Amino acid sequence: MTRTASHGVHDTQQHPLLHEWKRLTQEGLAASRACCAAHAMVWHVRALRVANQLLADPEEDIADDDRLAAFVVAHLNIADCYADMGQPSSAAECLSCAHHKLMALLHGDTVPESLQIAASRQLHQTYAALSEHRAKHGEHPLVERALDACRAHMPVPGALLH
Image (cartoon, rainbow, N blue to C red; front, side, top):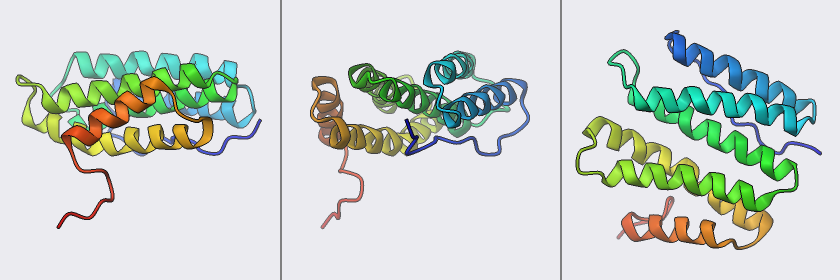
């Protein structure tokens, strides 16, 4: 099985949790390049646990963009693993979960503005991943609901507004 996309790790600050997320993600990507999706899944699930910690315990020295990027990238990588293992429905569920979390953050009444802005930036990533999933695997109810929810609340990415 070949990987068509890797959701990479960009340079992040050396905060211990971000550093750990980056290390786990790099291990997962290495396993994916070795065509071992099940092994990669283990690393990416660990990276997601760290990303969830980053979201649950916001620290002032970690940018909201970095925290949400870790969360989204972990979901994208896990979805890729599911797809590589022939489980497109599980991939759709994973992508939808990330997308709905971003939508909830974007529209939450008690969510800080900086986190809402970061969610808006990351929403384009999950929207693109959901659209790509639909193109490769066909329609799936979770994917369609996530895309519809996004279209209802904001312009489609790349659409021209007049």
